Length: 469
Image (tube, rainbow, N blue to C red; front, top):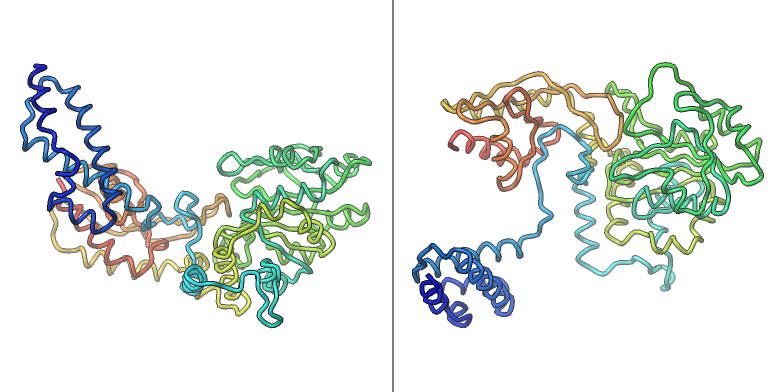
């Protein structure tokens, strides 16, 4: 047996011979000679390990060649294709955190491409021919859209919360209702952020009930601010109460304490018109007297990832002067997307230009019309599949509007030969991947979150399900 392995080792071709093979030439033409040599050496290392472990197998020269070429192609494809890929979101979850939250609109995408592929005025004042600050771009629009005195942007809302607390409450105490001690995605916990910011936490009230008197009793000489946190991804119902926003702002004003509100999603759209109880609106919070608000750019706002801080000039300027602001600031690409998104709100075009807002406002009838067209296109008799429409619901997601749904029509796909889990796997591993829901041995497709331009691709991939074993 050792002689067999030794013989196989002797027949492993040299690196140069593999590189000179006509079958490898296309790989080199697409990348570089040095890159392919690196991959060949890795494949040969794997082959030697395989030979050492498969002592019972007879390896022919053809076996060796096939192993090398197949594995070289696999490694090549793995490394030259970005792992971050487009997917078709057919789940009906509009702000799907695992799928990148809000997709940006055409105007934002065009602006992003323009700024990404060219030099820009990121920190240059064309009018005066001198340097200026990059945060002026978003600030001018945020002040206009939110009707606030000042605004700045950092890289996400967690960073915004941290920077606010570090700037305004380091070394002091922050009062927060016990019912607002939340944890959101990826183990982001308000108490942990408070601790890292250098501020101390002082809980007031109970989980389900907090009164103004609780805040009054919690104030000490160390109190720096009161933090109000929107729960985002859960609801407490039943025997509950808390001060209204107006009551809390008046209370803070009487005690000369800033009120900071973490709004989470930061909704600028009236969702009541579509039957959804709206998340807190930054405009309303600022108008009510909240000194500083913060919220995400890639949730209900419908832009890219960003943490927006807005409110009173006196406090926002203190936050802006924190040396950590530079470490948490956004780059030109994030600013390009945010600027374009805010212009859509300023010009009252958000319902047309921002996908998240457009998806939320889609009526059941328009979704049903699109779904029926797809079902009709797939109506050619296929023994393996049954495709029809059923009632269902979509969700906004992203930690927004918990326990509230949007009525929709779902395309239901069932197979006579394969499980729903198998169908889901086939779609998830297709090109491009399609993400769906499974229910009662069927996959459910919600067109609310599918772009019309992707419908032909979706139809083609569903057809393939009927041909799969």
